Amino acid sequence: MKKINVGLLGFGTVGSGMVKILLENHKVIESRLGASLALKWIADPDLERDRGIAVDAGLLTTDTEMVVDDPEVDVVVELIGGYEPAKGFILKAIENGKQVVTANKALLAAHGDEIFSAASRKGVEVGFEASVGGGIPLIRSIKEGLVANRIQSLFGILNGTANYILTKMTDQGKPFSEVLGEAQALGYAEADPTFDIEGIDTAHKLTILLAIAYGVPIDFNTVYTEGISKITPLDIKFIKEFGYRIKLLAISKDDGEAIEARVHPTLIPDNSMLANVNEAYNALYIKGDAVGNVMLYGPGAGMMPTGSAVVSDLVDVARNVIRSAVGRVPSVGYQSACIKARRIRSIEELKTEYYFRFSAEDRPGVLSKVSGILGKHQISIKSVHQKGRDLVGAVPIVMITHEAKEAAVRAALSEIDRLYEVIKDKTVLIRIEDWK
Ligand code: HSE
Image 1 (cartoon, rainbow, N blue to C red):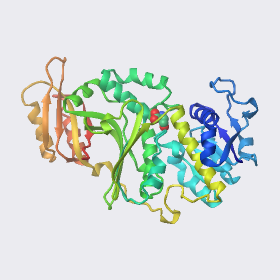
Image 2: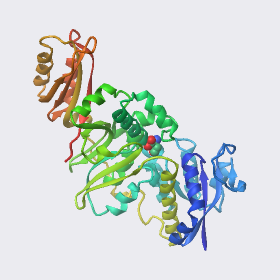
Image 3: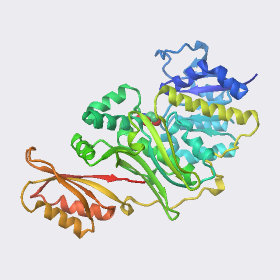
Image 4: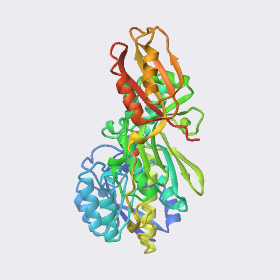
C-alpha cells in the first residue's frame, strides 16, 4: 500500500487530536484513501508533557527545521499557531515541494495570499479546513459543495469560546469574567483569549470565508470587529425580555455592488436556528442564489473535532498527490486570475435595527430629550421600556429602533452621551439582525 509521510509541527491540543485519529482510525482512513497516512515526525519544543497518547518515541523531535527539510516528508502539518515561526516553516515546506496543512487562521487572515501564491507557483496544496469552524467542513462545503452558487450572505457563529460565554451568561445569568475562566479550562480558548472575546478570532475566520465565498483577496483589515467583553448581565436580561438572544456573529452580505463584512455582538430572534447554537458549538448559515439557505452546525473547537478537520485535509491532499491532481481545487476555490478586490462597505454605511440602553436620571423630560435627538437624526423608535427605580442613581431606559443608518446612530448617541446632566454613562449599542 502506498504511504504518504506526514510531518507534524506542534503537538498541542489539535496536534494531539490529529495523532490520536491517525492512530485509532487508520483502518477506515486507509479503506477510503487507498494509501496509508504514516506519521514520520512530531516536532514540538516540549516533549515532556504527557498528552495521554502512546506514540513511538522515535517520532518525537524538537528539531522543526529538520522535519521541514526531510526529503521523505510528503505533507507538513503546521499546528504551531501564530505568525512566526509558523509562517517561515510553511513557506520553507512549500519551497521544498511539500504539501501543507494548517489550522492557522490568524496567519492565513494576515498572510494567506502570500502563502497561497507561493503554493500555486510551486504546484503544491495548502489545506486549511481546520482554520474555520473546528470540525465542521465549512471550507470544503463552500469551495466544492456550493460551487454552483453565487454566495449572497453568510451569518456565522465562529468562535466557541465567545459562544460558550454568551450561552452561560444568558442561561445562568453569570457575569462575563466567571464564564471566561470556565471556557479557558475547557480548552476552547486561544493562547491569548483576547482574540476570542474581542472578536478577532471570528474576524480572522470571516476574512478567510470572504475569500472563498466571493473570490476577493484576503484582507483582515476590511472586517469591522467588536467583541463581547462589554456585555453585562443587565443587557442580557433586557435582551431576553425583548425576545432576542445575543450571539457574536460574523456577518457578510453581497448585494452585487459591495460587500458587508462585520463581526459584532448581535441580537437575533430567540426562535431562530442560529439563536439555538449554544455552548462551544459553531454554525454557518449560508444563502446561495441557487441552493437557498444552508446551515452547517457542529463542534467549532477542541482537540478531536479540529483534529478531524486536519485529517480531512491530509486525506484530500494525499488523494491529489496519488492521482497527480495537485491543485485540482484552487486554494480559495477561485482561479487566481479571477481573484478581484471588491468594495467593502464601512460600518457607517450599515442600515439595521438597534438596541440602546441609556443610563438616565429618572426625572421629567429626560425621555423627550433623548427621543428628540434620535428624531433629529431620523432614528425611529420601535419600542421603549424604562426599567424600575430599584437601581440607585441612574435608571436604564431600553429602546429598540426601526432600521436606521449607523452613521446617524453614532452622531445621535454622541450627542445624547453629552447630556451630562441627565445621562450618566456611555449608552450601550447592540445591533439587531433579523434575516428572515
Ligand atoms: N479559540 C477558538 C474558539 C478555537 O474558541 O473557537 C477554534 O478556532
